[in-house]
Length: 221
Ligand SMILES: *Cc1c(COP(=O)(O)O)cnc(C)c1O
Image 1: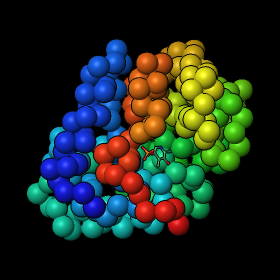
Image 2: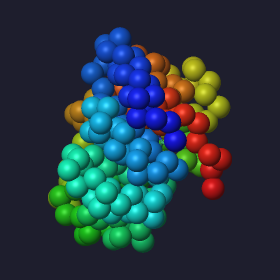
Image 3: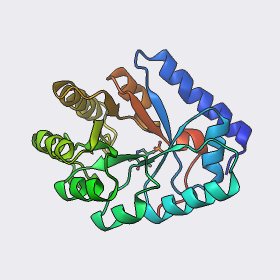
Image 4: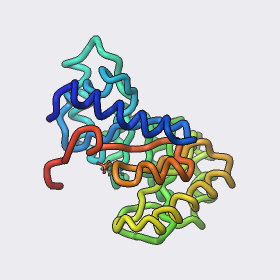
């Protein structure tokens, strides 16, 4: 892992990109595959938010963080990975924001295991089935169901297209903002290391940044 100083420098660079844009966006540091030290580095650099993709990894870091850094502010922990409903129970109590909610069974299970939780509905505006997200037509039902069951819907989350085509990416981001506006949702979680500036230009209020802060990740498991 990179040193605290290097992470703080890179963190500053991302913050600068946000300040240069017209959006006021929260930077969520994506720490998947990095050790718990990465959470501590984010807090020391002045951040408050971390995100994880894998249930077991998130739980281990959450427990380890409390043990190893009792004096440090605890980050707000976002779950951003593909979520299986049978993992919700073990994740509850460790997750502060459920970002990848894209179907009814998840709404129901989160409402049951983590009453009143904050959620984002993940949308897939371009119909790229492989990365999760609901089609735009399902967004109203999911929001309504989540609210009925007492969840707080902060906004929408989107992952830009895999091929990175800027025109398609822009279309996905603009459609997401349009939907968020339509339902009066303040949070638009969009933008990663590779499409950060475009997301900010399109009105992102929350960027999820991994490699630009922590360097390249080891190959995915
Ligand atoms: C891994 C991941 C990110 C961060 O990706 P980088 O390219 O490292 O910035 C953001 N969002 C999601 C959903 C991810 O899985």
